[in-house]
Length: 397
Image (cartoon, rainbow, N blue to C red; front, top):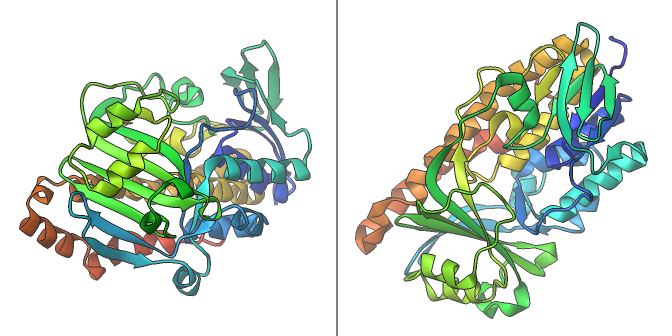
């Protein structure tokens, strides 16, 4: 067994905090550097399939998160204008029966809070806020992280968990060139009591239509409903989760969609919008003692509900590798274990654009046939079983 390294993590989001907790649970010293002055996100939801909740239970935070989450009973496909509905798959008890763990829909700030509290229970001063990373240097024996305030921190390894615009990635591999996909995303949160009573259901709904789709699902034990609207539109290219739009603009984007969607939009006080950018897959994630995790390594379009879960898996796997190997070997094993799976998730997410936005959905008859074909049970199994059955806590590293 190697001596236990000291690890720095740039970024205190879902992936960074999961990695920190997993490392601390293995007795590996960690420092997390987060540029924000406090650990919070503008409110939004996240879906955690069994392959993600399996890791969170292994880290001892599953029940804490369950108390703040919804266990969705299932997911469904709905036609954009008629509201006609098809079952995608059952969840709730079925998720536990089939995969061993639940499917949670979670308010992102709640997930961050549960992870941060767990990290601080292991090491009270592990998380450093208001600490923006400016760059790093490394040699054969260590890596030194430079913060914008002039502080330098030295350790045995550095993990860049700093998101799609990762400074660590750019320092490793140069400036990236994200390409605008021609798609924007809207998001918002609505108290469940403000929605029509028939919409207050513990299921995830995916409305599919020509040139756009909408996903909504319950949060916080059914107190809130999360809204995400995706639309093909070329005039907004700002990749930011904090850019505000207006209710009127959002309603105009989904004009002609079902009355339930219009009712939902009318209750979103402050919708946020961002441009979806695509980045070419990296040929490698690691150089020497520095590696990447989550969106910094493998950003994906939000069409498979696996972005956060892939980061959670990464955090678990990198901790296991550090526990079993010396630093540079650990990063080689981590990348080898994760590259193919995350690539397949990135490609699977992109492939869903064809299913969610297909022009044929404008035609009532052909649209129904399209849904019947694309969401037949065998095709659903092909797209999701390999995701949900994966066990990051035991798979070979």
